Image (cartoon, rainbow over all chains, first blue to last red; front, side):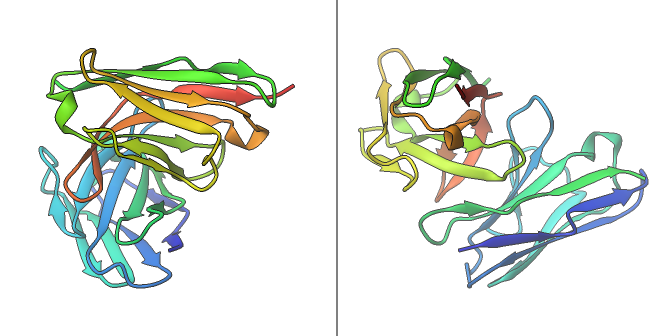
Length: 106
Length: 117
């Protein structure tokens, strides 16, 4: 399953809303996760099962969608949220990640 | 606190070998599946290899027959023996803990493998 993400880069001002998209080449049902990745760190699990926040993830992060179209929304960007975000399908083998969306400061 | 610390990366010539290690702490290591996930320069993340708590293994097609994953539950250690290395194996290799169906809830900081002559 090929995962695509858009846009490749999203420029947002602190306090604004960010909407990131992820598309699967075939249905993954709700077997979709989102990760945040900052330089020099391992990725951080944000969302699994398309819409369930992982432990200790702030409520400003939310996920939606099913099948082939998914969205990660960050309701009010904080300085620590500027990073790369990957989606990840785990319905079929091999598990695959999207190429990422970089969220940077406008 | 869960911690994963990778080591063993470096520069190696094509056809050479390296052994990566991951030291785990802060959780019951033997009960969870552990994986190696890599990110090549400018590319996305890729599942490389994984191992269940009791030794069942997974290998991505790109590394089958060349890489071997193992673990030592008595020492809370995960290993990846990489043989016949190719330029396309150049990447940052992460050790990650698998929970639930297929989610990685903790990752190390990565160890860099560079395959070049």
